[in-house]
Length: 435
Image 1 (spheres, rainbow, N blue to C red):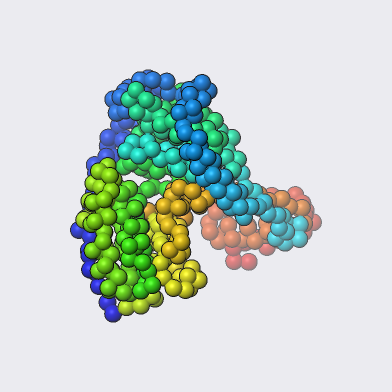
Image 2: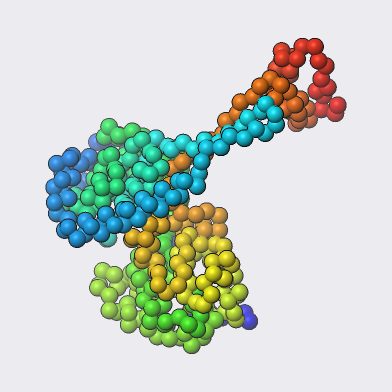
């Protein structure tokens, strides 16, 4: 059976590609030349903020005092889970030492980057969880300095809960600066900060473009597009829960795709019937996003069987992938392209977004075909080293000289030649390319 689209998207993430490149490029150049003062100019222009940029200990304490105790406990709970999972991930990377041939030792060493810049969105929504996800993983990785950066609001500054979360999770400095100017400040080492080696965290299209332009000068977690989510559901799925989960992810943004893939046409039709009412029931600030996302970007696809459903999902390579179907182990073994996988009705993307422990900074726009999301590993440089005895390097030197000459790289060959001549002066070697 060919895939049948009961609902087809009229737009894609690429349809909304704005001409932001030149704007961002100009802002970055202005701030790199103008430094702190120019960054503050842009803060005043875009955020209408002229307050303190680097929060003092007193300001952090004052913000923490505004956070209710119950929310503090929830932030602590989420932080503990993310930290526990990050530690488990870090344990999967270890230093390695192996004797390649007798006397020739090669090794691997995992070294954390020195300075991390964590961007925490704070515009329409205060992304408390993004502070937890980015700062905690950088801390567990062992980064020497962590800056958390979040947009301030006029007359308020950074949302108190973001300040509290960033501080709790281990940020060395918290910066009240948003957008391109915040990314630039971390990259260029403004306001007395160390220059960031890596920039992580979600943001709007201007933040994403700034990271894209700066990539190479600094590392980045990924180039992110609008968040997207796909649900695989069979006849056993609860239509109301499926519809609720789709709407919960559509509220991220007007251009956030959500997709339902199923082998049960009746389920698909029921979900499509339920979604509009669930959207209408949202608060207005959430409703507009979810309505536009469902109208323009959502798709509902009916497949012949679960194998075709899995193949369809892998083609989409969604950021978030939920399975609400029988035989969860089969799906876990079969599926290959996703940012994070949520198996069974008992879990949901919202859990991963906020408090499960797995990271919510994930590949979008099909990037899950080739990469995973933010983890403690993103802050780790996996470097190699080698050491040898003279005898151990002998065979390597011979092979190196011959291969190099075959390639036409005589300088490389001679670096091997001189060692053989020094260490084994009484031996003759055939080091020609066609020897």
